Image 1 (cartoon, rainbow, N blue to C red):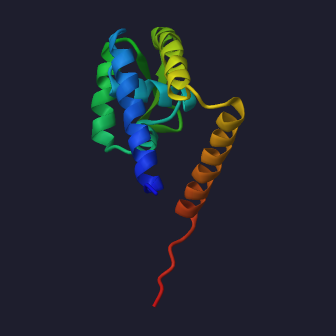
Image 2 (spheres, helix red, strand yellow):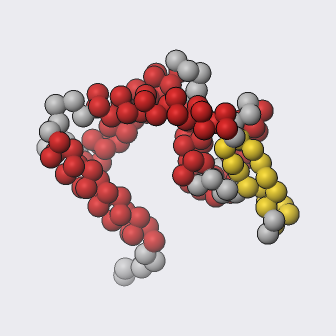
Length: 147
């Protein structure tokens, strides 16, 4: 039997590559759509929080946001609680772009699940949600030393 971790990793990599190829047609890079999609879920987040969500260094997020701001896709607003911090928001242009990406993502999911019954799709979703919850919980628990 193949290692489940390898299967999940390969599946994730292939999904990203497939979506990249589809998104390239409308001029969006993987890094851009990852930032935009994350901001849609966490609009008003600061750059440090965004870096954490994306699992990248804060300086990397700063550069990505600089480029997205120049492209009129992201807006920085001063944080009223912390003058040193900026809150990030999507512009109307970014929302339009994300709406263009939605059908591409939906088509990818349909292609990916071709031949999988509706019941198995639901079971897969429920199982992956449980796996994600388990992993999130294990990361939140304090690490205990054995010995």
